[in-house]
Amino acid sequence: MKKTETKNSAVLIENLDKYLDGKQILFGINLSIGSGEVFGFLGPNGAGKTTTMKAILGLIRPDAGTISILGDSTLSNETKEKIGFMPENTYLYKYLTGREFLRFNGKFFNISDTELDERIEEILQKVGLETAGDKLLAKYSKGMLQRIGLGQAIINNPSVVFLDEPMSGLDPIGRKMVKDLILELKKKGTTVFFNTHILSDVESICNSFAIIHQGHLVASDSVKNLDKPLEEYFIEKIHENTEGELEVC
Image (tube, rainbow, N blue to C red; front, side):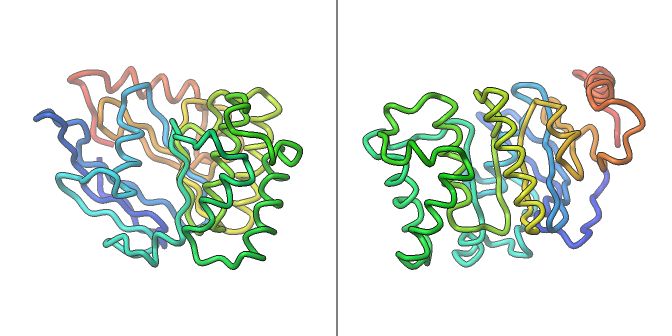
């Protein structure tokens, strides 16, 4: 994959490699996500989407390459204050209520108690949990847990948000709510990087996308440049680049 243009990047990854148990699982990943963009990261199960996201966030150490977020390649505490993250499988403290869980997460940031209280109520409303704020997380459905997990990712009003499969487990109403929230973040100028396998969501809300397959980046483009449905394009790229037949993009 050719080196990516920086284009005022909020997130920039250059030549990222990762090995696991002696086996290479990421191969020279290059990505540039512009400030204020919504970016969809696509790929089959096991393609390397979550591994790439974890490397970007410093949760695992890359074996080669450089990564910067908001121009910072050291991931300083100052930069971390501007990042939101929702993992695919979030561990939630189920003995806390939704409101308590948001407050717990908000305390990691430099937010006054008054501002935090206002922010919690605003988020509960945005994710459709205003009537369930005092309910224990142990009593939440899978979809409700997914939405409260999204809520904690934006509690600090971040400049960049990373979401790993944010639509997973949601019914159509929940998916619409999450899509609307992502579009609201986009309108505010927040950069959103999300992993997904739901192609229609990428077509409807993303500025740009990339496809990863077997640890290789096999496509990267703007949604508006597509001359065919994304599903057709995705399947075409996966078939073109299966096993030992990877092409250079």
